Length: 379
Image 1: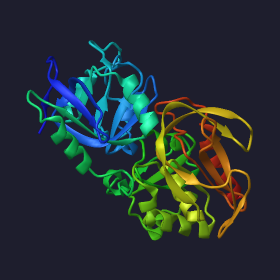
Image 2 (image 1 turned 180 degrees about the horizontal axis):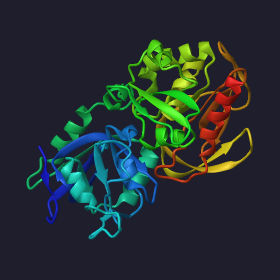
Image 3 (image 1 turned 180 degrees about the vertical axis):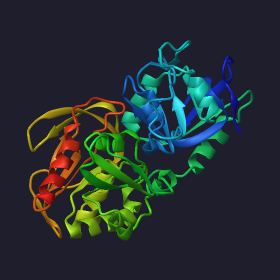
Image 4 (image 1 turned 30 degrees about the vertical axis):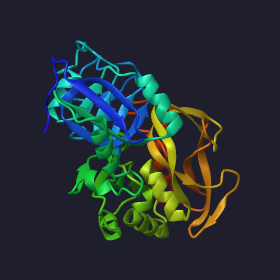
């Protein structure tokens, strides 16, 4: 049950599963919510963050102190709804100011029933999560609140992200088509594991007709659209649970169809090749993560949202059932695997978001690389 927090000083409490608490004011809807506490380092792009299905069941802490300055518009959402489980900001904008703004951020959070908290020390909270790691959290707001012991007990009863199978919960239920912009050059089957709207748009800009398929799509469904290439999207949850997408990807690899995966899709490729995955301490989230493309030596500033990673060797190629595979991209902050490529057939993936919504455009070339693979296969 949620109600409005606008124009009020309704108290709110954020409770972490290790017992640390932060007291502030309700922001957005009033009520109770639970999820995994994570922090995002982006200084802009909050609307795209909120509507990214990869944030399903996560409570997002914004490290930038001022949030909501440009309000909410009807052009920038990356899906049909807000997916975050909760939202944490230090200083909400008192009045949004942007020519495209249609309503304030707190109005939108309230409209969609998203419980948040403001007026807390998000810098201290971020430092705590960096030291202790991402963990379960609850936000409680209202005129009367339970005592801290009761709130903590509720938080500890909430499900963990490790072992969570969430892609089916956020993916489309029915196939839909995003037509090519201009002349159609290729057809791509895109497996929706939590896809963002800008991703098929970036492919459409390159003359690709994108058939977006449900996460439950079979290998027969994929090839029913006669694809020139297959794409596996970003999405939420633990890749260790994604047995069905892994099986479908192996079917694509067996047919040697050009393949491109991003974020969750990178982890799916890792599993399909025989690598393991593991949970990062606090993950990478934001639009300023430095990654090196080891195939060119170029360093990119990239947009990230992932809490799991592929466990693959950085110093050598690995023999797999589908040929040799190597790490193509690496995070310069912590050496986490940020990309994979097969050397003997047209397949590659990255752990970040090249669609740049929100974020820098350094990685846009990856869509061109996918086009090149399809051109090569056709030739």
